[in-house]
Image 1 (cartoon, rainbow over the protein chains, first blue to last red):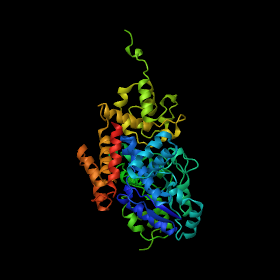
Image 2: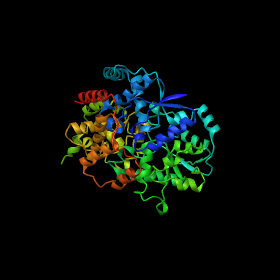
Image 3: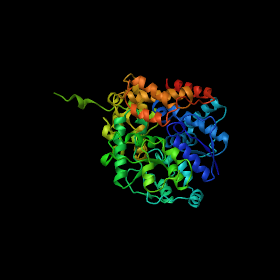
Image 4: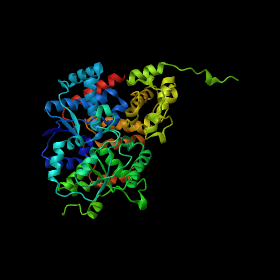
Length: 296
Length: 186
């Protein structure tokens, strides 16, 4: 199995640990990732908030590049994934508008997007039956006793017709499935897909603190000891804004892990210390208390 | 005295304009309020999601373009996912934001507009977002130097912010995309 890998801007800076754990886990599962040549930013919320053409053309350039490289694209960031899928959908089903966008990108790049590849999120790829089988066969350290809340956020499943790879986008289950596969407990809770306000984190922090507080409290109430996510913006938001929200009882905070960090631990992959050092809320004490940290 | 407000009649020009620009079938809305029911930002909105749609239908342009809600919409698409008529209110908000900036109403939440500007400028310059540079530009614009300072220090300590930007090799293509985007918004 081989994919083109589109990391997105965050994974080269603020979410480097997500990048490292993705590479490590995919390597361990014998899935080859080849980074997309000369990729550009997808434009995120800021592009679609300011200019519609930009919000389609920026991700489309990446799709044209990916098609030249030949394999399906796998994307770890929920926002990048959402925008790339959206551009793909726009060209495939957007009628005249999609056609004219494609013509414009052809004028810029010398080739157009033919729609011969698929855009997939890492959680979608990791929950393919054959990948799950491989994952199961390679588990070295089942994460017994660890209670985790699977947090999907908004852009992995919405809008469902364009992006969702879940059967029921209001009750997604693939992150939970991965958590259970590696032996941890996935708690039942009601805030799986509530938005954390990622795009407003810098410009409206007081609103975002309120949203993250609700999400973290709900996870704690459900009995979770940590939150698991699959998006660098969700992680950054939940990880950085908990202290400002005052934390839970006694100022306690819940670590926020990336799904591939969780899988990496269960697969016994080296490097987890390097990942966890990047978190503001250190997950090491929790993992140590359950004897889940690899001996260093 | 006669009630002046009772004389306000719906105008259909705004709805036509917004439908054309946003591609959203605003006219279909029958005010079931599912959008507002699921909206995580409702607690901070001055106009609720269903009211935004209704105001567009009625042609109440001024309060819409001055609304804070269009700027603090989190763009999470919960409204679109649940709307029985397939209306994406965040896409309406994008259209209304562009109209507010163009028609000199300005941004009711200037910091949000400043952030988007700093973000997009970084992409235009390098093809990728340079987070440290983008934050610096945002802070200069909004003069919010002390806000999130301790967070910034934690990020630097953990080497989560790169000092030097990464650049796309074919920057010419990025510049052309931006050029076309500007021409279209004129």
